[in-house]
Image (cartoon, rainbow, N blue to C red; front, side, top):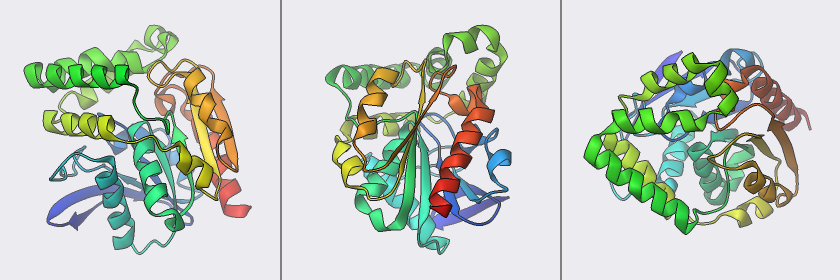
Length: 267
């Protein structure tokens, strides 16, 4: 069901499906809540799914002020406050994982568990920051459409690009109208975010790591390094996915997420 909330005069759009354990699915950069469409029907019978468009994405309005992952985490905290949710599970894809981690640092008592879906606790390297700055300049000069068309194919594994070219094209078309100012906000927020590996060590609950073996955005070798940090890690690899496992391997992604949520709920 489509719903909206107002936060400081700004609209935040979300969908709600199912009942039970509150689970927030946080999408990544240059996406909106629809990126989870293949996952939602498979999970909604087992929990209360809340799928917001992160501020600045989809139908949600961008936050004012200095770009910050922490500010986006605060918006999620206000969101669950408005819904009267005391504790929840956050599953974050890529940038959504950065938001979940910032939330875990600031509000650990509000989380039963959280999950990284193609995401990382490490700060950007200088090389990564430089790449993001080049992308910001490209967006300012050329707009969102050529940027999305150029960058989106690299999110998918080579075998996906070759065997399911229509999926890649559908994703490009879905997000080509993304607001340039939102893309720039997110890039600047990601550049500024700190290393939060210590949060993985300090968080008392279980943490899911769902990684793509063919991921070139957050390489598998880098992802696996962080998995030994938490007290309790649950680790899975999508063998045929790049950075978009919810689209490339939706059935296996759903099964692994459901298994994690069952563990959280009944352990």
